[in-house]
Image (cartoon, rainbow, N blue to C red; front, side, top):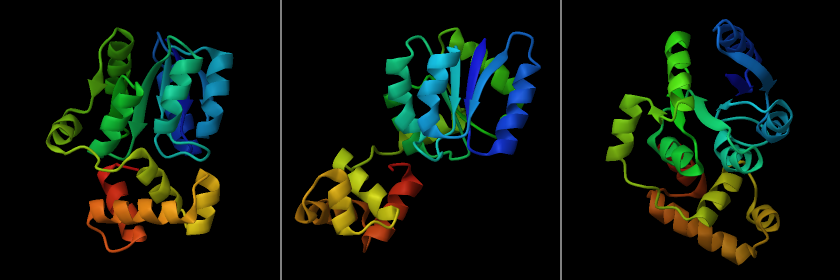
Amino acid sequence: MRILLAEDQTMFRTALGTLLDLEPDFEVVAQVGRGDAVVAAARESRPDVALLDIEMPGATGLEVTPLLLAEVPGVVVVVLTTFGRPGYLKRALEAGARGFLLKDVPVERLAEQLRAVVGGSIVVDPQLAASALATPPSPLTDREREVLVEGARGATVQEIAVRLHLSPATVRNYLSSAIGKTGASNRVSAAKVAEQQGWL
């Protein structure tokens, strides 16, 4: 099994790559530390499985997943994360990931789960799956989410408008709607609520 690892923490990525390479049927063929480097690395290395972290510079694992599946047909995406948030799980599966696992899983168990995913199964952390079933879907529209993400990064209304090709008034409307839907008092609090729920 050919594996691509995408993880921004160098020590964790290197250690995991070494441990996976010890499995007789595994070969780590590429390692990247940025989300925006995943597709190019996958095109070159042609992995069977791409293990993607969620939080990476350049692009998140959730953003990369549909691009990777479109560009490298046949690759199987597994999200490996410290963020056990039901919203992230739902978004990962909707994007086409076939696995969603937490980083604290033992390597032996991870190896078993990767084999199961390549064999056609969908593998999800059981406790997280139960939480996801009990959690309502995100109330945010795609645009509201985009505006909140930019706002959480500290962008002003004018900067958000330029980046997303919207008018400032439209940005304010989206922010107001997102604040109302999250029950927050301002956009910073709204972004925090949405992030905790895995909606961003």
